[in-house]
Image (cartoon, rainbow, N blue to C red; front, side, top):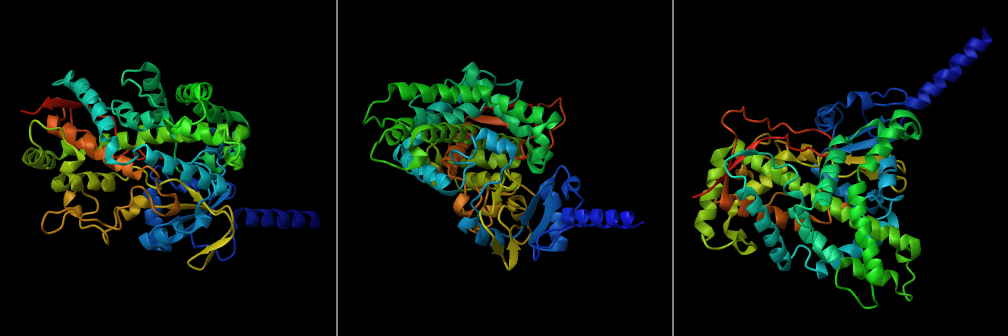
Length: 487
């Protein structure tokens, strides 16, 4: 009898510990042992979190697998939280660690290494024209090659998936490595396809991330390494570029970003360990991987969404056509100089990003030490999500939050206006480094394509859905489109 009572007490305590959250943790739903709230998050986690915020407020606490997790669901709380350096950490997810050689590079690193890599990368890419009009010529060359490809497919149903990626990434790749990749390069196309497949298979709350001990054996171990192996074509491209630069580098050569990085690595007067020896080489590799993946995927996915929305709402597409015709002469290539006159087009681009919210939570943050959010205790290691999708769909910020409506970004005079609730690149110290380039490229590609083409769905097929494929990114469904030359 006493043994039974003792076992009951021990099991009860273990259950309590499994379910317990830290004292003074933000309020949230009940958690199951081991898995926490994971089984209830569903496929559309951003929608479930928005639903929970109706009950628990702007700051929601819960367990997901092995981690204490906080969701932020109001604009002010997100801004205040992410400006604090204590929330610049990244969680120790197995795939993050494997992909980044244990938190090297920019995207998955933290602490001083992240600070050094981000500062060096942003400063030097800017010197090479990153996000500036001087990069425009490179982008225009890629656009012209893309337009030639689409012209050869005029009038027949095609799919645009994987067609934009290399064109979008090439300007960044050129200033990174000094060379561009032909848009029909089979190895580069395979790398793009594999990256897309990896991202499509990832989710925001999966056991692979939140139950990391399961990746040590069995099916999840195989899945983890299969996912990493899928990146081999891209990693081969990057490592080939790195090795070539290492072999060819000579002192004083700063002709592209990689040579500039190697100049720092080889500087005997520079004792920063993040640039020295094997550490420096791993950081170089991972910074270049980060740039390739980010450049190849997000803007391309945004363009796929934009064309899907314009074909779904042809009246909006027609207004854009009219505006381009009015302000871009027939014999001129659309440029950044035309941007200030293309107010409706710019508003449509912005509302496309808002409506689709490609990265519904951005990238996950974690607390690097014990801290607080609005009086709640947040222990070191707590993962913090910002529900950017929810901010982009709150009635308090938008007149028609669940509609694609360019008027969200136009004032009473039809001039583009800003909104503090428009945060597709997140906010704070870990906001997207590539925002300026992404917005420039999105605009240049969109205007050039719409000056040249009309996009329509095949008449013999039902129109595709505009419901996203839900995962780490909210990507557009695969769709057939007919490209018509405009007269």
